Length: 161
Image: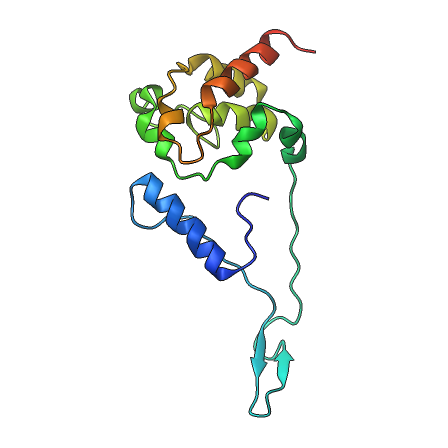
């Protein structure tokens, strides 16, 4: 759901964009998984499962992402590359020495805490700690408007449906 790409070439492009914007050489979380094992013999016959699994199964966990995609403002969180560039710019993240977040840090982490992990208490504290200064938006390669998302999140916290 997040960075699923069809080819190895596309995977390298995503990795390059991610590490370039995060200002470090190689992202540490790249995980590549391919299909079932296959091999070819001298007669050009492809054999599956000769040196590994014959089948390959993938389970996608939605975990609220479809619901998040339906929200016109908060859906921007799904565009995040997880490059970490916003963390370099966030004054709160710098002052809290990396404790401004849940599973994801800074302002965008408030959206993830509320919508994906369901941690409403953590999301509330993060949403009201964010300064909405917009430095993260300027730094973001995807131009995600985190201040707009934080304001929408604060409104939904203050005025529950």
